[in-house]
Length: 223
Picture 1 (cartoon, rainbow, N blue to C red):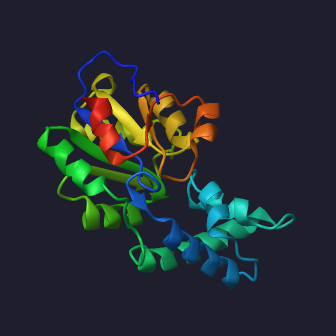
Picture 2 (cartoon, one colour):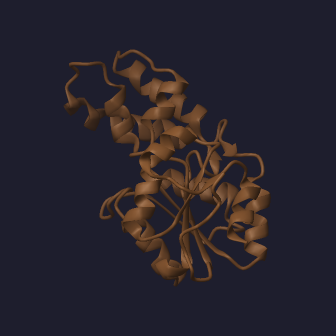
């Protein structure tokens, strides 16, 4: 497995994706998505379908969930229903993947600055950050008006500004093709994790080149 990062500068800063990277959110996302589908009298989807749909934000996941022939105009009505339900239930079954908290604690002790950037709704990102990562992660940014969502570099650039870091000293860590493109668009090397929403073969097809099978692997790659 390739564990080589394409960087020559000392790394001081780590930018993490949230869903599928540091938090296993898929069950709560599935419940909230199917709540919306039921409200609009549309067929439910499976957890494995939603695993593939998420990555470009909730609205895109909802769009991909619509049956063929459904008007996309319905999405504007579905979004607030999802937001209300998910805000109330985003902690029901969600939690860090095994080893994540220990990894972040060690990285913090080693002096790394850390941020989370996510296409998840900003209110949920802030709540989950405070619940699980407030002791180790300094900045958390989610989807909100005025900032382009990933794979645009805007969220990463905003996080680096808040941390006082440059792209030359930073690494991006995520689980999907959206994350790999985000890193590329931001000018950061990328560690692709293999416990999240995408598998290794698919990530390789997208151009990913450095992989972590466990959270501890991230520490090994950085050192």
